[in-house]
Amino acid sequence: MAGPLPLGDPAPADGRLPADLRLDPDAAFSAYLHVPFCRVRCGYCDFNTYTASELRGARQDAYADTLIQEIALAREVLAERGPLRPLSTVFFGGGTPTLLPAGDLGRMLGAAIDAFGIVDGAEVTVEANPDTVTPAVARELADAGVTRMSIGMQSAVPHVLAALDRTHRPENVRTAVDAARAAGLAVSVDLIYGAPGESLDDWRTSLETAVGLDPDHLSAYALIIEDGTKLARQIRRGEVPAPDDDLQADMYELADSVLSDAGYDWYEVSNWARRPEGGAADQRSRHNMAYWRGTDWWGFGPGAHSHVAGLRWWNVKHPAAYAQRLAVGESPAAGTERPDADAAELERILLRSRMAEGLPLADLGPDARTRVAGLIADGLVDAAAALRGSLVLTLRGRLLADAVVRALTD
Ligand SMILES: C[S@@+](CC[C@H](N)C(=O)[O-])C[C@H]1O[C@@H](n2cnc3c(N)ncnc32)[C@H](O)[C@@H]1O
Ligand code: SF4
Image 1 (cartoon, rainbow, N blue to C red):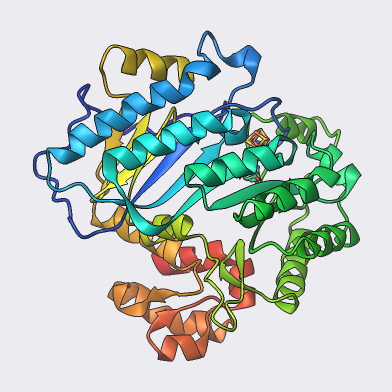
Image 2 (spheres, rainbow, N blue to C red; image 1 turned 60 degrees about the vertical axis):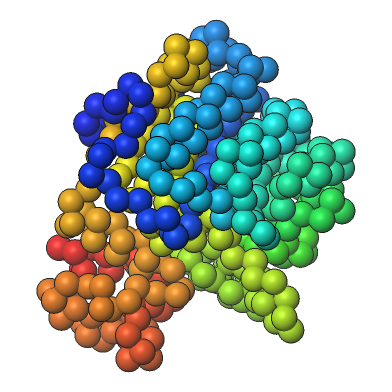
């Protein structure tokens, strides 16, 4: 089940925040609610998620009530430290949140809103597997306050879906998108490129099919081979080929060209939103932008990570251990850390340099700033944006984003 948690320091059993931590009452505040259940595990996935046989007594039908206990704890801990901040964004991720009844998701959302309040026009996203979305589910979620659905499409090509071990029927993606839209939800679709046996033409088919669904937002991720997954074992045994970096780079360039021709702008290396023309709404994921900008969020659920005023902590991973902690009135946090200034700068560069809004050059230390001219000369960083004071990646820079970060931080 996913890699080990970071080490960090032990977290206090009562969940209290360090006395010297200064919370900013005006900073935005978000909530991530993890739902750690999947019907089957996809061969490539190492998210903290469990199928029925892996639950070791944890009960899916009691999950909403357990998570609501963590919401009560969070309210108590934060109320002690100043005025509570209303939620700017809420994100149900997984796992497969839509494996739970919509009523359970609605109850968790209601509890979070009762505890903290919510800003007008807040973004509330639910991740969904295409097979689990019906018109009734989408309507019930919208009635509960959900505003956006992120659908795991991955590919439109049957042999690629099979290589990824996806069990959903490709035609259900359209059904799920139509259901979400009819309920008034904004729609995002997730795609993966570089699966074993996937050609550039297969990828073009998936991109064109995705664009044909007219979503408000798309994410396209290069397939990552995670240790411990079935796919990693298949590659190690030589049963399937490892992803080819050059082909994945061509696939990224194709994605950017198909999506930008269809009216989508990149705003983070793996994310595109419909161009807001003629006063249309901005469709960028505000929740993900909150992460990348380093604002405050509380992550609820097993294995979820939180970040408040520079302090990070993470919960125990297994849903059974998570429920046991909360049942005896203890915080589910397993560990905590307070990154020093160097670690915080590295993380800021890592996240902000991947965004189209860019990393303010003024935020770079003197050493890093001297390297920007070389990155411009190599065609990795946009010269005009740099003149305006921001580091923004070019298309070539987006393909080599990790190398740019290394050049700035080594
Ligand atoms: C946690 S999943 C949630 C969506 C839902 N469970 C589903 O898969 O239909 C979020 C997204 O992460 C991406 N993802 C998961 N594992 C990945 C991997 N190893 N490489 C690239 N993308 C991955 C997939 O695109 C997936 O839709
Ligand atoms: S459905 Fe989503 S979370 Fe579940 S195993 Fe597949 S990719 Fe991972």
